[in-house]
Length: 303
Image (cartoon, rainbow, N blue to C red):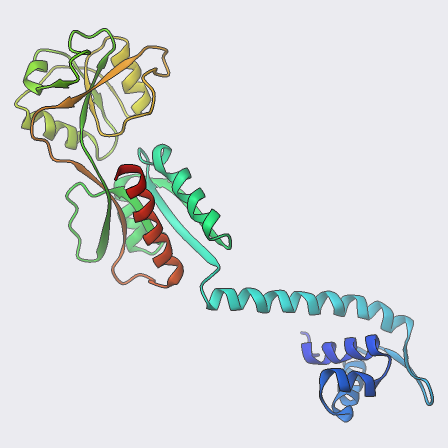
């Protein structure tokens, strides 16, 4: 166990740098006896002889003193760094945000949101985890994450707070050479006899099935995948149409084919993207800044 103090080390460093107790006491603005007692205690605790005492010429470091000074200097510098970082934590200019992101939202939003926030708040680290809808809710409730970037999808929970970030309209996606591709808009009833490519990700299937039911159709399923890009590739390959809310900024799919995106004429409820948190969670300055930044960042993209 360390028995000497940072103050004793600081006094020792000052004496070594100033060349004497009187000089160090003036720099430290304390009494000479206080400095002398600190040096005596430090030598007694460590068992080292730190200075050679000269009656007329003050103090000079011994070999042990010179080597110990190197360690003390590093310790003193580290202590000041810890002090600065503690002050930053106390003022909440530094810290960490633990962000959970729904799997299908991650490639569209996570990197851009995190990069833009950390560029603004350089001393804050955002640690991101991709999760399913159920995992996000559980992680919020058990305190594993601070925020969840997810879909609302009608979620109602008294213990969670939802900040709406965007309301995404569902769309129909067909192959570039599909007979309806040039239309720009489509009534789902026109697709009743066309095969359907299902986006079968956790939490997404029931939403899209609800849209099909709302449009009054029950098309045969020709292909299913939990990957948006696999679904788009299947559509481009002619397996059928699909419904999506996320729209990549390019028509070419991973499979090399092309798709066309059509607006839906039917009245369809949007899917809300939200930033969720526990209502009783930490609401310090860093968390507030992140939440406010997320709202502004999404507004700039979807406003």
